[in-house]
Image 1 (cartoon, rainbow, N blue to C red):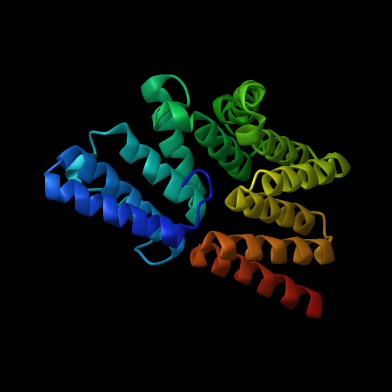
Image 2 (image 1 turned 90 degrees about the horizontal axis):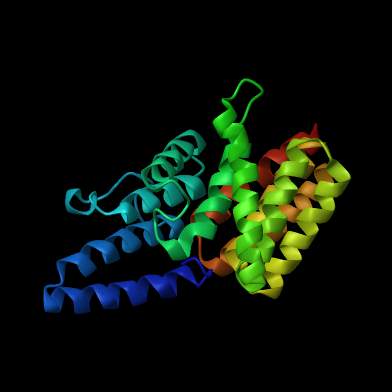
Length: 245
């Protein structure tokens, strides 16, 4: 899932593994696989949009909190997403609460989400979240540029956009999109295009916003996320209405 594999194909793989786990009566594997099954279904747009849906027996696993936070991020429930990420970080003191292998993804989503809801009066802890996440991602990128360079560039672009450094942000978004495409991380290519679209919309460059949102829509369609395709379609409709006025 973190690698941007085609979601419907991934769903079939998880369903097969779940059948195998059930045949062996492996309850721990069953619970973890059901978490992935529900998350993938939500991302595709097939399942309920209730990001908090987790079986009681799975609540004891840190991964359940990770799945809730990731679902909330992609759905766009920003306040709840931030609460879940902060809860996870407090639990372990770092971004490895879902899995130590997922720390980079958690840092990226936490940093991006904090920027989305941050205000002048926000607590210092929230204001520090994007920079802390960027610092971690830069360290991880030193170990594996393939997995993390595009994440560094995207979070950097979002910080630059938040600070009003628009020309620098534009270059950073372009770099993040190119890196994600180079590394075949189609979901993160779509995410970078989506965030770039919101940046251009914010600075009133509606043509660039429209063009880049179309790229995001294409990436999300390739990923297999009808939920995100529909979300981007709504943004394009809003832009078209505003341009017609």
